[in-house]
Image (cartoon, rainbow, N blue to C red; front, top):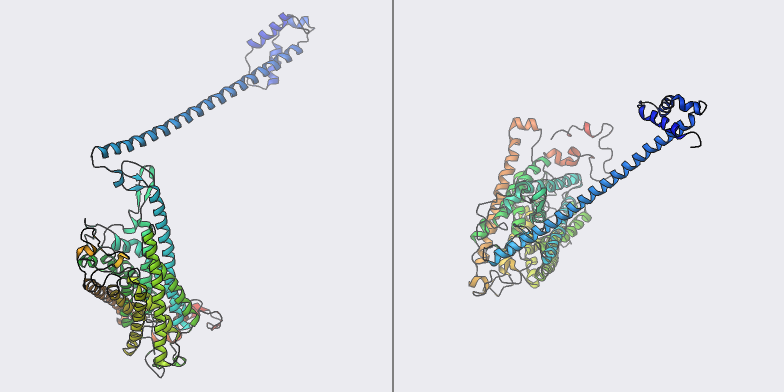
Length: 626
């Protein structure tokens, strides 16, 4: 009011209100407002209306700013209200979900109490808790499932050391010029076996369908190809895991061991391509059918189940007879290594003069290292075959298997080296290691069902048979570089017989078999073995099963190997391939397979460093000859 009459302010304010605000800067707007002030108001202030105009403009700007702040506050309040409503809705949904679950559980209890036939205990457990089709794991089931999964994974990893041991034994027993070929074949066998076991092997071996009595309704399984059904879809895209996952991993290690046995009978003269083809067939068809007939509740297990059936706890027949007889078939088809049974050094090893044998073990450290690794890995096979670690009884079974495994291997190694010393008056390391392996193979069928003294006897006899058949094979000119047929085939066959003869049951009146400390087929009213006296039935069942396994593995492998060699006898194929698919030619064997097909050309650093000269390996005329 110091700067003018109130009427003047009203005049100026009216002019501002009547003036429409243009889309210009605030300064232009202020000038336009002041220019519209009535002359009477300007006259009273000597034409100076700038002060009220500036004050009015500042007031208008402050008013606009205040409106913006109030709008921000209102928007924030609305957002908070919206978040609060969302939180309430979420709490209501969670509460309703709990009520639904409670009603479902109550409905199941009511149905059970009214005799509707739905029992919670009969529903399969689920990691997602209770529903109309499943129930939650009990605390005990949670612990047991976790322990079993851990047990099978750890034992499976241990069992892979058997394959590592095989690789070391085979590479150490063969000549240095072929070391890389041996190791590549071992790696290829493991990789191929895993893919084939995933696609075909596991479904054939352990897949359904099954009859009401638990046995396969077909010759092989037809469910679970490529791990289908291992995960079951649930609501909202969730997946329910099954026990098949852990079972697949552990059982695959047995498949890998079986495929690895075969390569030993073909060492130093087999091509990678030919072996890989046989390994795929072995892992995807031959071995899975053996498992389907035995552990998979198929033909052999079904036909000889009265009263106790075929008994092979950890694979003396299923794994080692299968692999050993396949190795024999391969050794027969590819024939002996070039010069093995010819020339002045042909009988050097038979006479106990390894210094004159060009085919003698080239690396004793690799041989012993491989034997120790294989021995350690065997605990994964024998102890892990309890299939779980959820009860005290399973723990004692695993401990019994470990003790018997140690005793049988030790007894086998000692008797083998002593027999060899008597024959040649020298300590032969290869026979010592071979005896340990034979003892391990022999005890596999009965690791939990024989007493400690029986385990020693089984290992001794297994190694003794190995020492008999090893020289017999050489006399027959069958070239088995690391005696895989004598160790796995023969000792495995004996192990199946020993499982029936040395069972810890009372004489031949009761039989335990894979039940371990208990008698098999126990009935509270009828007693052990279903009230029947087994007598010689277990021995007959194992003898028949062993013969069936050996015949299946030998003749199928013989047929496969023959087909792989057939193109080499056809002139057009011979020219096209430049070499046999399965067997390396004599010239390649003499100079070493590593030299022709591997880079670098030697398995040991420094050996023949200037082999290729200045041209490099790719200029070698044999490099592309495969």
